[in-house]
Length: 177
Image 1: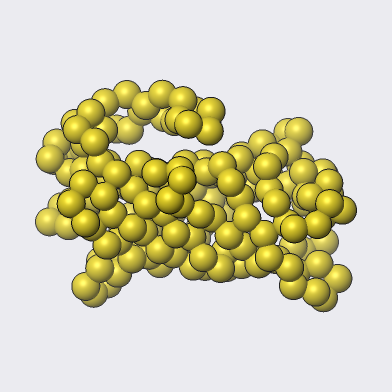
Image 2: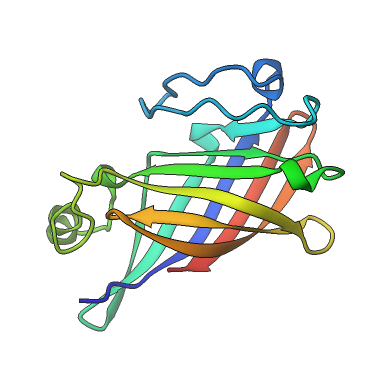
């Protein structure tokens, strides 16, 4: 059975503290998700942006039996390393905790972790790792890479905007899978 999930809005507030920008090791974040240590960037000045949990959201729209329904994922952790002058070494990675999806309905919330949807027992996280990031215009970019959901990997392209504001930035993306 094919399941469609449109990530309608991903709004993430990111911060780039010094230890992260310098390539410091990742640890558990506020949600308890393990974060991998990033590869050393060719340009050590390139900031690695990390999530500000209380100011970030991951929402989606899915279809079941011909009816759309909205939802949100409260625990996710993206990392973006991006120096606009050195995009060859830019990376975007993300991990999404599929065990805590809120689809606004108890029956759907109980079904989503099961084998028919995400099989959380065997595949608790969805992941994305970019292979390349292309600047489109202004603050618009596209990250192309591999997304893994339920143990199945597919290449996807995620268009996003990055709006820096001092040591913080906002990233907005929307795509369908």
